[in-house]
Structures are given as C-alpha cells and as structure tokens.
Image (cartoon, rainbow, N blue to C red):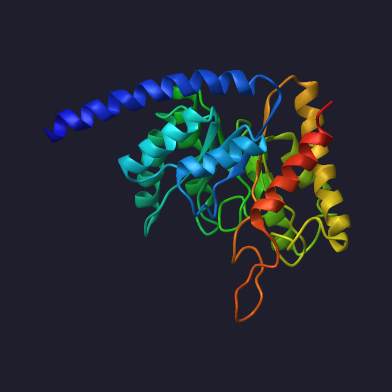
Length: 297
C-alpha cells in the first residue's frame, strides 16, 4: 500500500513538473524574470505564492522541502499561481567526502523538479582548491546531463567568499557561472571593492543570476535601502547590475534576479524587543519595483 501511494505521488509530481517546466521556459525567454526569496516565510505556501503573484513577481527562489507533503504543497502553489521557481542547493557533512555525496544528491533531487535554474551554495572557504573544483565539476556534469543551469553563489563561507579568490576559480574554470550576491564581498573586504576592478569585472561577465541585496563595508545588508544615507551604496550596486543587464541584452541571453533582503536577524533589530527596524516584505517589493522600472526598456 505504501509503495502504491509513493508511486502515485511521484506520477502526480511528474505531471506537475512537466507543466511547470513549459511555463517556466516561456517566462524566461522574455528577458529578465524577477523572483522573490521565501526566506522568512511564516505563512502557508498558498498564501505566500498569492502574495508573490499579486505583487507582480515572476517566481520564487527557495530550497527543496525535505518532506513529500510540503513539496507537494509548494509545487501545487507554484502551479496554481503560475510562478516559476529557482532552487537553492548545498552539501553538508563533517568531511569532504560526506559533503560531496550530499551535494550531488541534493542537486539530483532539485534538477528532477525542472527549476528555471539552481543556485548553488558550493563548497567551503576552508576546503582545498582541488576539493572545491571537484564540487564545481560535479555540478557541471549534472547541469549538462539535465540541461539545467547551475549557478554558484558568491557567498561568505563558500569557495566564492572573496573577490580575489573567486577570480582564480573563474580563470581556471571557463564554464563556471555565478549567482552574484556582491553584498557578501563588500562585507568580506570591508570596502566597496574599488581596489579590485579586475576581479569584479570578471565576475560581472560570468554572472547568470543576481541576488539583489545591498551590502556595505560593515555588513551584507543595509537596514533599509530606501533611506537616504544608503544612496551611494545603492547606486554602486545598481552600477554593477547595470553592467550585467547590458551584457545579457547584448548577447540576447535571459537573466534572472531575486530580491533577497533577509528577515531578522539578518535584518537589523532593536535591542531587547528584537523589533525589526524595517519591513522585509516592503523592502523586497521596493527593490523589485526599482529594478523592474529601471530595466523595463
């Protein structure tokens, strides 16, 4: 009986995935598609996806749920509200071999659901170059086998934690494509990267997906990008993103952008009450409208 139920669920999911994959390809061919993180989501998948669709987003970026019931609920909501989806993946484990096995398993599980692309949190900052390259190559093999792009996010704690380090990987691995979350590099280097133009330029050229969050020399997320004190930092990020958008348009390539301002405690809070100093949802909507209006032509 359990086997019958499992097979039935698999067949239902396969049908949903096939339908969703076609819709996603149609959306992505239009140019720039805009996604919102589900980081901090505290409502049902149906309620969340209705909010996302009503705001005008094209889709959601999230992790693949571990349990089948939640996965079914999520996929149903994506289909009902005609939302595209990007999945995040990473490895885990106390040593490299365990991490590699878990990483490949998570990637295979994600590609089976036909996302627009996969955003990978790849490797560790303390893994060797050879170990991190083995992970990148494993992702590349899975990407080619399933014809689904796997982008590697610039992120603290990963192989891509710093601009100068990522530059070396990009120079060694011509197929390596990035999810650019440059806010992390602002924090790591405690600067707006003025002294690393070559590394930044190469990263911009090799970016296929953007995480639209504003960083600064003291952290990966300003408290509110609408505040006038952050105008210079916002403009610097816009300049970087403008370059990526121009490159993709020149090459007639689709581009995806995810609004990824995070919830407390990533979003600063007041002491004692832990009241957030701004509204995460309103900020992500603001960033979406800012970028959509900027790149509408």
